[in-house]
Length: 290
Image 1 (tube, helix red, strand yellow):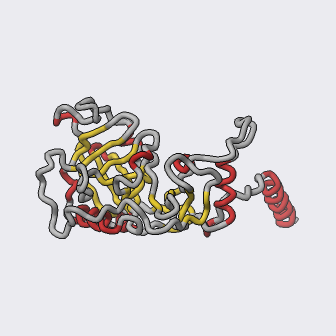
Image 2 (spheres, one colour; image 1 turned 180 degrees about the vertical axis):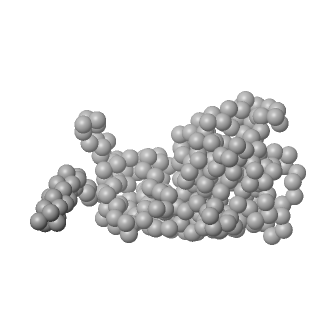
Image 3 (cartoon, one colour; image 1 turned 60 degrees about the vertical axis):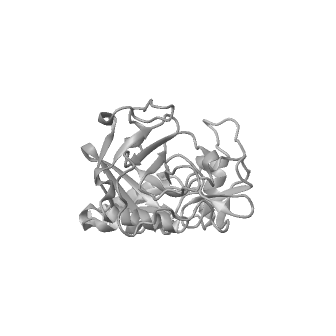
């Protein structure tokens, strides 16, 4: 009798909880929509005081630059590097401030100008164009893309990582990198190689004191530099130290519904849906792997 009563109560509670749970939205992902990011695409940068920044690399879009970055990580290039530039509402830049440190063997000093991708293979497109492109959208592998109708590129949005360079024909080796910490500087699109995106820890860059030298955000004195302790690919770290991340795939109706929802924010907070969105305001979702 007691067992039957307990079973009835358990069933009733389960039904009550199910009824109370909100129905999933068309834009909600299912578990299969989350795809693992390979460990050799994750660059783990550790600053002093155990501040960790995790960057997803984009080998498909900048293969030579990313190959350089992988060799630089394997050689411990950033183990004695520093942040030497923090330009307000623009970028944080790090690497060798002396510009004298020799590159490791196997690093290409001047890679091709990997500023463009061959085709616009975005599987979900945004409704409106923007001043910098004819169309924008998201690739199935979790990257935002823009196009002029001939080539495509990863746009300069918040937390994107690019390769610092000198004036052309310099393309930058990848030894010095920067991350966007302000409003997306889209005027840099197709002028500098984008090689990745900060997935976690951007606050460790964006909260740094601003530099004041030369109007470029450079630190005036070496004591202001923020030191790195280590820069490694996740695939090079011990198993227990490897961060694991997933991106949300864009090749499904749920992602398309998510884009539509981002373009048309609804009440009660929003009174007037915009009917469109900037690509930098609909960055592909990522998460720590469960």
